[in-house]
Image (cartoon, rainbow, N blue to C red; front, top):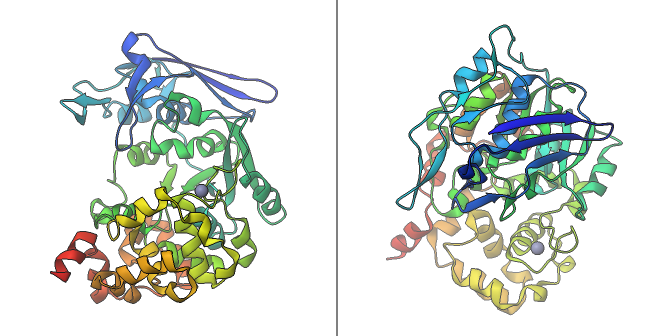
Length: 423
Ligand SMILES: [Zn+2]
């Protein structure tokens, strides 16, 4: 793959030029790894970058176009030997006998400059901001971070309005990009792509830390399916994406990996001005549709914590597609949703209330009372060591830590086990 790069008065372009037919196809580097086609060779940002270290430019190419790179790569500029050593440990992934696995050869870079000093890392921290509960809670915890929102080009997006409000108190950047339109079917090609805009502006804004809004549910509980000990490999050895960023002294991490969605909403409750502005779905012209499963989950959690049940028209959710999700309980929705549903029973219409009663039959759902508003201290191992005391202090301003001898409550969470317990 050959990459080129151009900056105009208003935009930055990165072009991916396949050298082989097979570089037009790949598999999205995120489960369930669907096959994707390189639909748009040109990545556009409506931001004319002033300065970008060649290694960061290479990182941006990789996190955007990784599934399409197969072996040889020519980056837009010569990269440092240091970064090349990390890239040389990377392999392309592909589907072999139905499994997503690393292929045999490592990546080889054609243009390496042994004289180029690697990116030394910046002092500033930023939040890759989406407008939902998770990343807004990160803003509450770190009001001094630069807020960076990537808006999908030519699409309505109400988060842009929140960004305008935030601009009076925070340093904000709202940058349009076609990042999610590069592949067909659309979507980011790798999860690390959520940090693309932050990587683009890192040199200009002296950024050394990119904070993500991944909570306990996605990092530790496999979105409610079962517990996974995410901290076990330590901050340094999480996976190839983290290693790429770390090689450039650009640290990417989630400071809220130990906090449930209910814990995060408790933090937001202390900053009530954000509550009515949160965007967790874009199906209604860039705004919450209040009809999908995601909106129901968020509305239940928000109203449970804020206690404003009258504000939501719950009957809007009384439809087949929602009932399908509810019928999959307790294997659906995760512990925060289940906790909120059980504790909202008196305030909900009959059709929804019955699912809350159903969940009270499961002991592990009731056990969430003991931990759902506490933070899981082991998650501190997932952030850069120099940040741990600060993050601990910021979180403990809002939430108590879960005592060590009760951490098993999270570590044994498993919806099927709930059923076993019933047996
Ligand atoms: Zn929705």
